[in-house]
Length: 320
Ligand code: SF4
Image (cartoon, rainbow, N blue to C red):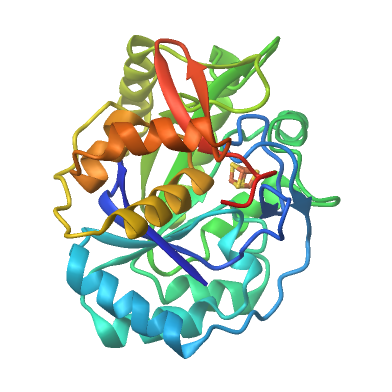
């Protein structure tokens, strides 16, 4: 278990991240999917086998300190891969619930929803944010590139079995000629949202690929298009749609020394590419520009441009 952040999230405000599946050294992620737009890149390990991972007591102590210090809006299971690959999810959730009343969220791609043990773990969280980028089987295979045998229709059916609060997260984008944002794709998504909502009331988080990935042809959609699609979904289904917009979560003030700052910044950009503004919002430290410059100079971090923004990512090939 690794703790990082809090990170500014457009869905959850300031979110303290818990990574339950550390990717092995030299790999960018451990996941059951390999989504085209994945911000963790495409040098990961794809697996369809959840396992029990042991968590150390000192990690829980550190988590408690972090919660006291940063007072996040949410504690979120996310990170370098699919958190339900760790079958200890439910136990970790229970331990956190003993420490704090701060709500617990999890970002999942839903691959293991057919397993009762995984659903039990998810139901210990307050909010499950489940990925649904397309309701079309062929498109699912192309966009999300799941582990062999996984089918989107089976994932959709199992989403209805979750007992906790559920938000469906869809990321709209294009990759060459592939897109999940045209009329036909959105029609299919709308009918899937409606079906899920009839059985299990949901909210929808609509995002786009605004962070860089190693596939240069991945493109986000414009704010105007996302707004129009969000309105259409809401008008046709009555479901609340919260869509990506650049919001400013409240900054997290925290006393931190230079060594800790470097460690925390590296942990953050290892899990998600961040702009300087994201990092400033998170740490509120005047030393950030100099630190980022130093990390790039030493080869620990790389700068990636996406449209008009510059993001910082950690380089996997370098131990810093
Ligand atoms: S499910 Fe998440 S971590 Fe896994 S490949 Fe897709 S975007 Fe990346």
